[in-house]
Amino acid sequence: MAKKDIDWGNIGFGYMKTDKRFVSNYKDGKWDEGILTGEDTVTISECACVLQYAQTIFEGLKAYTTADGRVVCFRPDLNAERMMDSAKRLEMPTFPKERFVEAVKEVVKANIDYVPPYGSDATLYLRPYMFGSNAVIGVKPADEYQFRLFATPVGPYFKGGVKPITIRVCDFDRAAPHGTGHIKAGLNYAMSLHAIVDAHNQGFEENMYLDAATRTKVEETGGANFLFVTKDNKVVTPKSDSILPSITRRSLMTVAKDYLGLEVEEREVSFDEISDFVECGLCGTAAVISPVGCVNDHGREIVFANGSTEMGPVISKLRETLTGIQMGTIDAPEGWIVEIK
Image (cartoon, rainbow, N blue to C red; front, side):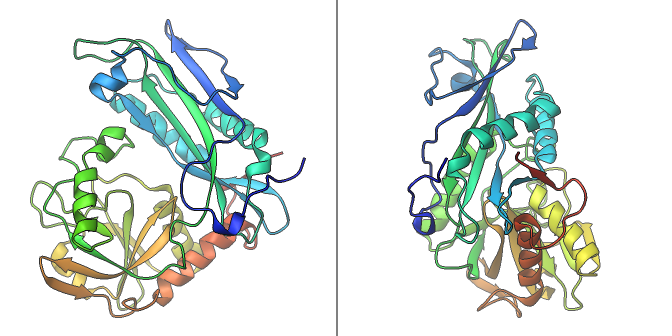
């Protein structure tokens, strides 16, 4: 089979329907075997729990074409584990880890002609998600659920190259202490929509959220974790029970320590100390790691010395090394790369 006739170098980061997706239903206490289907629409009750009480969770990962022509996925087992944690927090049944990884493989294989070629800067984005599907009018968890996984080819998150962005300190809270900030629930993203639209309207690319309890510690943005670099090249990432544990961030910390020989530290980061850092990056599946050049604190600009006009040297090396691992030009740690055969 031949690759689809797509202008791979010019596709954006958006949805494009592909041939097959995986669907499995949970009923009477168990998951069915699941199927690959060409049907891309979902039919549910008007009173479905997901529509009434936002009982939904999701994940995001990618398939790549490597330099030697293989098609691979990056650490899907960690996406499976994080989705299980999300399900437990929202009183949903967990979708088994082995079945999750197998569904990823099946969907990529079924849409192999949509996997962009190596060197195009495009990838096949995979979106697993689960929702309460039966009618629920009283406030309680659903009894029936649907797990779905679709694929869509996407271009780079930032067109025209990765350049330092300006973000603002946000007056809204992203997640409450002991809330749901540590899981990938749809409701977390719904509550961030007003804040990000407002930020864009004010001329900023993203929000820096502080902890809701004291508003003195850095947490994350609406969809990415922070990495900071000190003057002596130590890589620091904020630690909090309400931060989503980014798979990309965890991978970058391993890269920093084991590949680049840098000291790494996960700890609480006071907002007052960010002016002491020389580089800052936002990391996540979509953009890998993107440089932050400036943080605007209600008109006061905090500029990162080594990354204000172009990506700083440490952030650049982290990005180069991790993408090299993903694309097969640098040897990966055991278990990080799953080949689609």
